[in-house]
Amino acid sequence: MTASRRSGPTRAGIPLYLLIDREAGEAGVCSEPSGDDFGHKSVHKLGTRVPLPAPLGSVLDTAEF
Image (tube, rainbow, N blue to C red; front, side, top):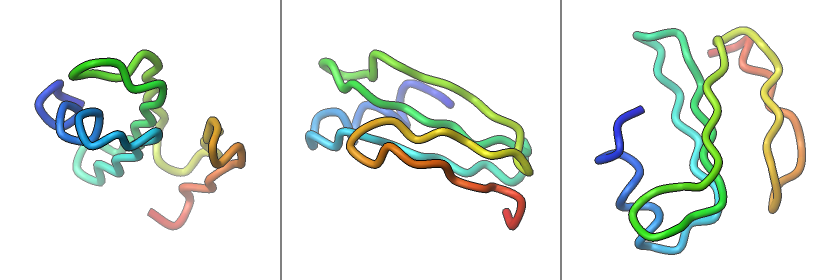
């Protein structure tokens, strides 16, 4: 996940950003927006269960992606 993809959502005040990248086989989760980036970032392999932080606080099963 490049910083340019993350800067728009942080400026818009979006608290959680999820990016599914089928080409790379990854799911990126970003939370805790701060300035032009997110304070917390994690990348997970598609096909796994991805924990989603607040405000969702649930798990996303990426097996179908």
